[in-house]
Length: 336
Image (tube, rainbow, N blue to C red; front, side, top):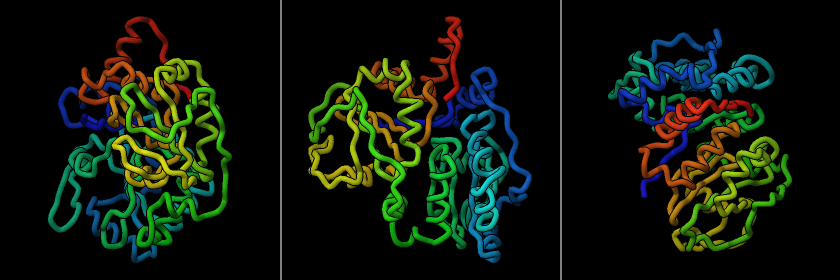
């Protein structure tokens, strides 16, 4: 079964077909949010290797903020992290930031051998989420890519990780786990099921990876997992929460003996809570960043109703689903 990756905005995965680009340009009717790029971002000629070298000369590193017009998650992340507060000051002191429109047509000189227009670069970097934040080292090499919205406390982990060049030593999730500053105590949920063997699940399965360093987990429980529309869709799944701090042995969906931490690492999940959705024993899609309840319940529906057979991507499904709901006179709540 193909793996379908969740975009945090409605049409951000299949950016490169004509129909999807047209849909993306019409997001104003689908709950889009207008925003501007902060004026202090670098006015770049989009020569990434040169930009990286210039940042290095100032003892800084380069960030590529990859966004899409109308993206509500882009707007929120800019407001919370790049317009004011401690995070903004830290970024200005240690990084230079270049904005890249994932539907744009500006030419980018990526390195000595490759040139792309903005939407081609998004495809090359496998940007399936907006916003996506890409960190570059002084040589113009990509060292970390964050898929999706990050709140200040979560983004600050990544900023320190890159500033201190910890990417040369360990992965981001390992770095965060070594900070020894717990911010979260694992919460129970009435739909959580206890199991340690995932090798024989044919019905929809939702696995939620959490740990004590999860800065977003409390809000996830309070605003998403407690929402009545989410609960309705979640009832169609077997829901299991795994603690990536635990060394307890489990059996993954392929029958391999592992641990929650090792499985999350194999799945390349560096965000908590990370949610992986399976059907008929295979991964269908995942949530690797913060979602509002509407988008979360729709990603659940996409899997539970096997809409992945009908639509080539979650984003195509979601665009059609929003049109369907609006045509039926149903008000879509894009709030948290």
